[in-house]
Amino acid sequence: METLRTATWIAVDWGTSNLRVWAMAGAEVIARAQSAQGMGRMTRDEFGPTLEALMVDLPVTPDTPAIACGMVGARQGWTEAPYRTIPCTTQDKTLIRVPGTSRPVHIIPGLKQPSPADVMRGEETQIAGFLALNPGWDGVICLPGTHSKWVHVSAGEVVSFQTFLTGELFALLAGHSVLRHSLNGNESRDADFDAAVSETLSRPEKLAASLFAIRAGDLLNGTSGSANRARLSGALIGAELAAAKPYWLGQQIAIIGAATQSALYARALQSQGVPATVTDADRMTLAGLTAAFRALKETI
Amino acid sequence: METLRTATWIAVDWGTSNLRVWAMAGAEVIARAQSAQGMGRMTRDEFGPTLEALMVDLPVTPDTPAIACGMVGARQGWTEAPYRTIPCTTQDKTLIRVPGTSRPVHIIPGLKQPSPADVMRGEETQIAGFLALNPGWDGVICLPGTHSKWVHVSAGEVVSFQTFLTGELFALLAGHSVLRHSLNGNESRDADFDAAVSETLSRPEKLAASLFAIRAGDLLNGTSGSANRARLSGALIGAELAAAKPYWLGQQIAIIGAATQSALYARALQSQGVPATVTDADRMTLAGLTAAFRALKETI
Image 1 (cartoon, each protein chain N blue to C red):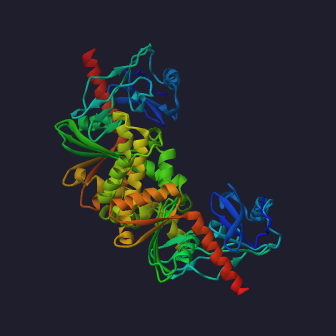
Image 2 (cartoon, rainbow over the protein chains, first blue to last red; image 1 turned 90 degrees about the vertical axis):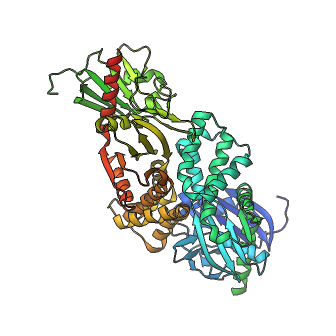
Image 3 (tube, chains in turn brown, orange; image 1 turned 60 degrees about the vertical axis):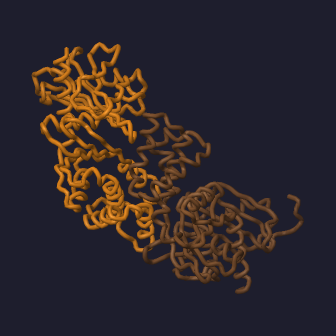
């Protein structure tokens, strides 16, 4: 590690499957660490030691405060950070202090929508980061992922949102269903993706039928694994866009997610004549955590 | 075993997950056996010994002929029984003899539809059984299951069919997705099922959103596991009915499947004012195998 500086605070993104930590000086990253020690399989006693062990080589002191976002604040997490209720701002000072730690650790609460019932944990921090970097922005933010989200933002508040199981469905179908035999290949196949998006976007009822059609096409016609994978991805994203149409129609769209997935969503929206700004998800997470740290400092 | 009779033939239903065998005298069952030794994990050499071992207590001789249907005739099965191409009759004499067995074993071929690409193995035998018991019947047969099928039958021929991944999707979502935490309970919840069917049947694009809504409803409102299970089932069946509408609209419908699933499909169709005849799946399988055995005898 070449830095001579010591961190002023620690940014933590602790999701179901992964733990990522950044040693920060203000808004600047000076060192980082990550592991697959997500909160999904962790008991309450393990959170503190796990975080400290991951930071052993980082330039932090035992007193450096940490700000965490993600599923770590769920009921099954380290300390429950109860959902805030929308409509509300994304910039909020109600962080939850983890009790019993020598290092100050604060968790950012998730958001809930009472009706239709919906919840998020982690995405609120990315949205706050996006708004910190784009003050005054109004529109719709799409966050592709295991549970992708469409979020209507207006005047600095989250007004409404809707979650889709698209990423998890893709993983289950690709990894565990009869389709798994027919998806070998990772070439990008834009034409197949576009056709599948178009089909389920215009005829969403075709989704259930289009899935087995991928397998049958392989059995009878030997369709390529890359094409089949593109068709599965396109069919699921098209079905999501059909349901999310009230969110994206006539709105300006920003996408926050992993690069590959974000590009697919941007391509699908483009096919409907809807331009979307693709952002860097890590940068949004860090900007959101930084905004929360600054807000916390003001209150101390 | 109280029977003094010896079987004249052996009926075999050999699917991916199960093997079922009936010792038959004409159309009458005189003894039966079954095991979880499906063809899914079997190598080619294991089929013969597995079948013989399961029949060790059945009243059959080493020469009693066997007729088999199901995935046992797939390319990865005992012997490939190439698909017959629709439109074609379900009563056909093109059985495939398994080579190298001392006992005569014949496999019933599946059916394929070139465009849109689709395949079936096993269901063709149940359809043949239904038509043997209901000569001259025209209409649409719905076969719920892991891969449910809608089959248009006219003048004794399969005219077209379409496969849906509904059962497999339910199993994946209930067993492996984030919804698995919210589905504890097995009470029947008709009102929740009906509401979910109605929602996705009329607005099929809502499927992707309705799945996460089940989880969020549990997290925020503690909705019951039984109600959630009914909603998941209803949402998936409603989406299937939306896509299969060209099959069932204005047609007479027969359902061949497991009792619980068949009742759900009949209920969902009933909600659309479509009456359906629910049949006994095992009886259809045996009637189809019996018809195939009789046709084989005529050709020998």
